[in-house]
Image (cartoon, rainbow, N blue to C red; front, side, top):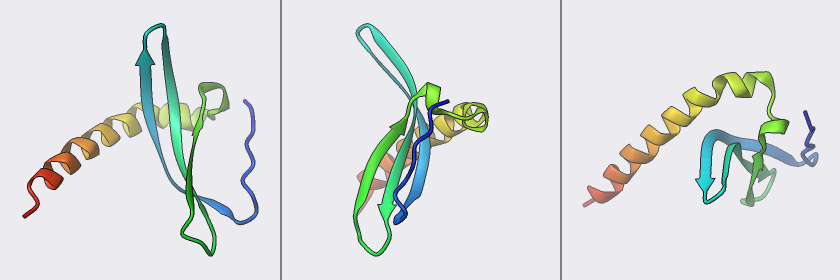
Length: 82
C-alpha cells in the first residue's frame, strides 16, 4: 500500500467511496476532501485501490451505498426548494 502524507496544516474533511467506469476502464476510488487549517481552502484528492487500507476496502460498499442514497435525496431536496 502506497502512503500519502498531508501537510502539517491539512486535515481530511470527508471521505467517500465511488466506483468509476468508462470505455475500457473501471476504478474503485476513495474520494477525499482536504482542508487547510486557518483558511477556507479545500482540495479534492482520491485514494486508488493500491493506496486503500484493509479498513477502507471493508467499508467501501457501505460508503458507496450511503453516498449514492445521499446524492439521490439531495437532488430531490434541491428540486423541491421553494
